[in-house]
Length: 472
Image 1: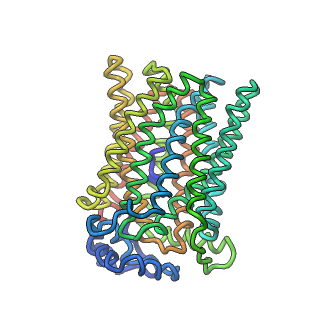
Image 2: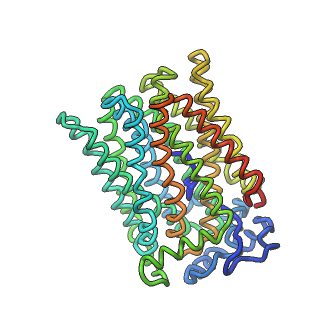
Image 3: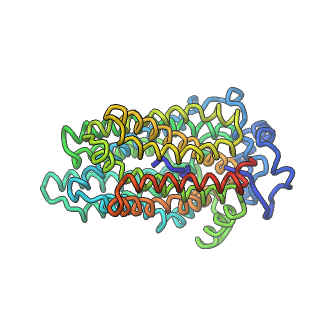
């Protein structure tokens, strides 16, 4: 989902606390800081990994170092294998993003059930996210990716199997959504925590941008492919494409081999280790406030995207193929902004980009509400463009935020920091999914979208008036 990862979810200045830089230093533009980190190079990054102490004062500088002064990520064989596995998996995910809700509606015709299945897919972030962060800092991360994708393969492959035997039930979809969501927790925390292990700090933004370009391309290819597969073979059989993508991705993770031995956390016991990650996040005001902002944005995006298939069927009167085409064309928005992310990050401050995302989300959601009032072709175009730009700005915010976290968090804490942010930010997704499905059932899909638009505009007003993000 395009909301901030907000690990997304969908990067910031540190504030008071042990080891925090002086106020004047904190207000210094990140460009100057990052040049010093770039000169230090990868070796110094590795040496810092042995010290889990406070956040590195110069870490964020890697976000703005000119990319043409550093080696390309595409010359790193290990990153290419990592990127290939991610690419295969994300295309399959986008097939499921259309096929699973379509299947739920076929079985139930209920927007509430649509929201419930989406919530079960995301609730594992709330249940297991903190603990997963602890173990992702202890265990071999490529192995975590391998096991997580094999589990997701088995869960999704069970759907076309039982459908072929005519024993598929809604209860099975509940279980499949929960198991696949649990695998996703392990996968996402380990996946994004691996990036600093694969590239130098000066290439963090480029690496994140490459992954988001892939995700954007998958939103272009996946839904269109999913719509065609649903039309040709049915929604249940279309899920086989995602299952196979996890199997192929698992082969890529196996090719990475066993990762370098992880430095064991200094804290004894998983509760103490978890507490260290949470305390670090609480000590970084900009990261903290954007994590809380991500809660609101993820509720908005989850509410809208959960019922989008229902919206497409009942408001735009689209079939599966045309719904997939709409989502596929909208996927060009994330691709474009992911490609531009490094250039935009050099030209604009992080705070400006994050506020721009908040400013645009509300009006773009409102356009979805207006589209059904227009002639059919124009309605299709307005819905496509507004959704594509909304997805794109969310991706841009995610790149900026994630890159900042990766560049500033102490390496021994990184997975726990990512998990802490994701539990809070992505924990809002099941809430948004349930709200979207419930409100659509009670007041209609267009009133629900209007409510989401107003909520996101209020978030922008709060950030513009009182947040520290605008100063970074």
